[in-house]
Image (cartoon, rainbow, N blue to C red; front, side, top):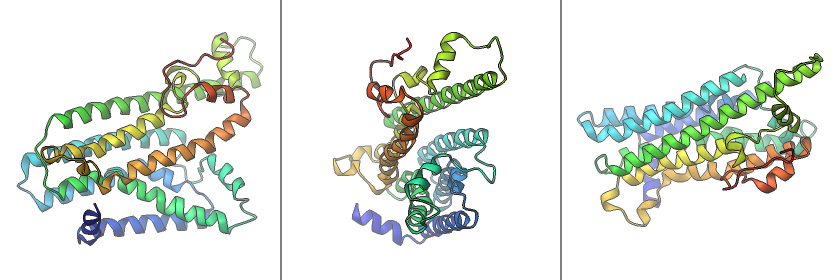
Length: 313
């Protein structure tokens, strides 16, 4: 693996992707300093993986225009990554992430933790490392298995590619369904709160729905089994993308070939999701009395077998 990493950073073509990574990272960092808005990376989260995967596919075609069917795996990976990115961009657009002044509410908790703006240094170090460097590295690394495949001798399209595609679609669907269930719940809850504000006598919602709204957080659908089922789907679909590097060398597979440098982004995101959930759930537990009980019964990200039964049920 060490030799692969060395070859990666000495490859003259790959250096252009590294230059782009640095430019984007420092541009985002400077924008956060100028505007004091720390959600610029959110606007790029669905876009950059498509951009990088398209770049990897383009360089593969240009470097070997006669490759023909050997590019099928890369075409497939580009399509899957694009499906993920376009859906996420739509979700973020719907939530208002592309408004210039939008800032993710979770930054309020982060700023409190660093006593910002009274104390600048600690927060700005965090901002530079996490916002400008780590998040960009993750998005840069998501499609990196495509580069690994095109820069190494690969097998023809095989059954494992089909299996990985099916699993990707399953995890993609889990993420999409969870996002929709959460969006619908929050939209209906806001509408019910508006009813309460306007003192509407007869609500359009059923008593069981109103109980859910009073609870404050979603415990229905996929959220009966996981507190963050969208994270569960997202983590595993990127491990499927990494899995294509294994299918590309299936004929010469051994224990050590199961691991390569392109796994770093999926691995890092698996860890960071755990940290992100802690910040989010700290706020949820302080706002909703039943949330601590919900935490004790339902898996944080990976599902539990038994569905959650609310106290009111």
